[in-house]
Amino acid sequence: MTVILDRPYTFVPPHRGNLWPTAIQKLRLIDRHLRKREAVIDYELRHADRFAESLAAGHGILLAPNHCRYADPIVLGWLSREVGTHLFAMASWHLFNTNSFEAFALRRMGAFSVNREGNDRQAIETAIDTLVSAERPLVLFPEGTTNRTNDLLKPLLEGVSFIARTAAKKRAKANGGKVVMHPIGLKYLCIGDAWEWADEKLRELELALSWQPRQTGTDPQSILKRLFRVSEAYLALKEIEHVGQASSGDLRPRRDALIQFLLARSEGRYGLASPRDACVRERVRKVRTAVAAAYFAPDPETGKPVTRDPAEYLDDSSAVDLAQFLLSFPDKYLTPGEITDTRIVETIQRIQEAIYGEAKETMPMSVVIEVDHAIEVPTERGPRGEPDPLLCHLDARLRTMIDALSKEARDFERRDPVVPSR
Image (cartoon, rainbow, N blue to C red):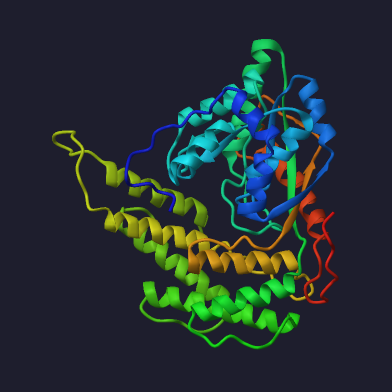
């Protein structure tokens, strides 16, 4: 749930002291958290010296990683430890509303909130000021959200280049300093036996669907057939829940039809246009904004708050969340000849999130954290009406890294041997 309906959005500023983040690093608390909660038990840093050089030069630094797992912000703590700095990071407001401990920990580690459903000027200004002052490097995930597709990059948000360029202009005017952007490639690799793990987790999903688990063992082709079967069952259940009946045929057009149905229904309730060719993520954002605005709208005559039944608003918010979630199953992620152990694990974990409400982080992982060369941020955008050159440059750099890193995973269909952790 992204839209929080128990209270209106309020900005959560970052904690600026160094005592807490220093203690967290010295006590290796991020290592314990990643091992226990995310099953990320090892890491490899590549070209951290590039980041260190920008720090030594005194630049305002923006770190721009791909975003494929919930562990991403925490694993960057290993990079910051290596170069001897702390970080600030922009994080969705709903993450500060899970429980009091996580909200406390997020702030102490340098996170501040952003309202993804609206124009959050405080968050933008905080990000810009951080880069201008160069107090600490700033982490912004240019994809905005995560969806467990480590080998694919979602469209980048223009807000990242706007923040970087505005800060570069202010910093140049203030002291002649520079703002640089480091693309960061994150790649998670399975350490354990993904075939045995997949067999076990598919058995659990089959039982959750009231099926008799298939006794097929760890044969790759049998696992793939079971995975597609479970995926189809989940889609059929959602079709019945929202449309009234399951359809037939290939999964992709069925998925797209359900996404369109969910979005159009919610858009109709709030008087929004329903353009089929518009970006799904943008349509989702507009509905979420409309939900929050309608729910918290004051009485038009008195201007006083109004108590409303949240049920209908939660239904619309949940519907567009489901539309965005369905889009997280890429069309060609499991193309024969390109299937890796990490892609199988990611797909199963997406289904676990759908059925259980959260993924079971029990597959031991290591993460490669690769730092690209610094991109000096220009102060001007470029010709009006043309693609943003800074965003295009970042997109190309990230795609090149992600494509190269994707080849380091093991081939699932050939059942490449398990590589032990160091």
